[in-house]
Amino acid sequence: MDSAVRGDAPIYDRLIEERGDVPADVRRVAEETVRQLTRALDFGAVGRSSGYPGMGFPPPASI
Image (cartoon, rainbow, N blue to C red; front, side, top):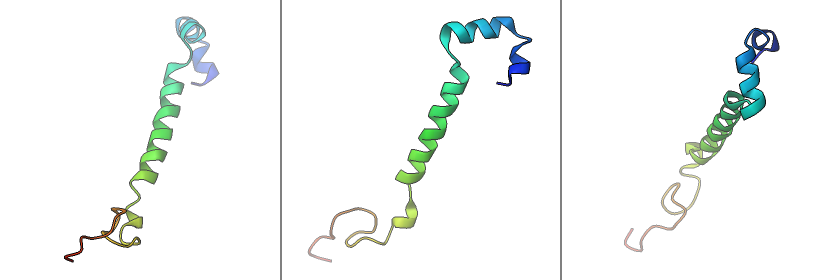
């Protein structure tokens, strides 16, 4: 949060001192989660592997 905005909220400033900047921490965790999900759900990789596309194992012998 902008320091000019926080300067008008002494209760908020005290909470940050006592508990940490929880909204900023949550924002960082959410951004990292989105990055991890983006990598994990990369559907562009589907069809590039052998076997069943994107599954990581070969098809059964009957196919």
